[in-house]
Amino acid sequence: MVQRSLVTILAAFGGILVLLGGVLGLLLGYGRYDYGLRYGVVGVAVIAVLAIIFGLVILVYSGVTHLRGPERSLTGGVVLVVLGIVAWAISGELFLVGLGSFLTILAGVVLFVVVMIEGPRLQTPIA
Image (cartoon, rainbow, N blue to C red; front, top):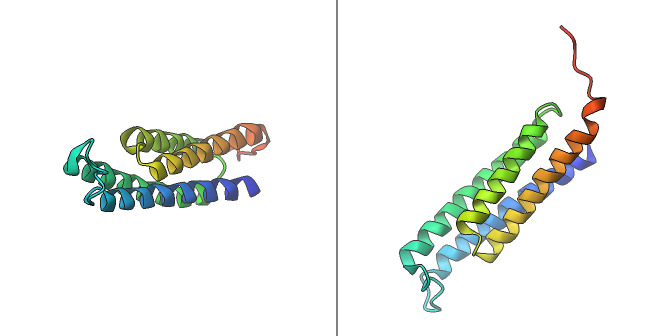
């Protein structure tokens, strides 16, 4: 059970970092520091909004993986890894988004490994 709490904390913290990175990217993209010079103001706004959306999805899904039973956690680990990879690929140039995506991927891998190790010990009822 400790591993599941660790996965929830890692995924939630990763989601918070992705969300915070998206908000900061959105705010800094309009400043005079030319943060959005590479992509333009609209490009940075789109990347930041996508990061905010992925941060919210990761936050919600971190809670869902904690509430699910061990039989469904394998899928939860794979989904967390995919969400982390997609968030990293889309807006990983924002530092906090990249860090949060890494933590989300790490949470998914930990959940996947825990389920694979404890898999033979799971007892399923026979109908």
